[in-house]
Image (cartoon, rainbow, N blue to C red; front, side, top):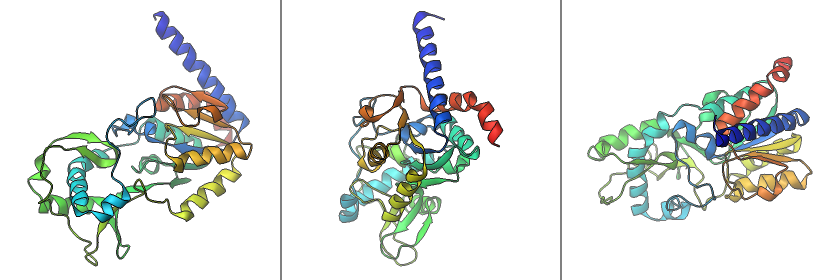
Length: 292
């Protein structure tokens, strides 16, 4: 092992020890998870290690609802990008958090992700803050249907698009450039003929109040907060760190790179999320076994 690798290993061990001590002293954790938990499952994230956009910012709610051209472009790209989401499986971060929950150590898991991978890993005390991409909602009659069913209809109506290849982008998007989207056929709601939208919170759209209230209620019952894989650049997640600190609850974080709350953390491990959470579970193994 060279000097750089030795230093990295020592740093990781020290961080794991500190996190294990944090989790031992604060037995009911309110966990906020972000895109860093799902990159190991092959789902790209939005931001770099400085917290800046890696690509143009996502479509806004106002543009999607107000412009047919935006909707055609969105669903054309989604047709190509959806398989990345549909085929993704839980990674080490999702599995480790499910283990911590099963051992009674997580009061609530609040995820900013829309991929459903925490649910697939077995987390049951979870809130999808920004909704789920695997569900489609009619904005007229509020009917909901599986995204997988819409994929079949999109392919049927647009067979030429289904054969295109493009680089995967966050949340089931794809980097499709240089194509004319004007003829892309977007199906209406099969129930009422209304406008279909992914059942997720777009930029510029408000998170449902009951979802926020449930998250704050869970935070009030927790002993401390743990941020995993989020830069917290979006206020909808950052406000929970602010609330925890205001209530005198310490906040720890596992995240590669800068976050919006770096000056608020009691502890921060700048390490890969899945690897570090797995090491945390292993470090707590005896304690967790005693609880089961």
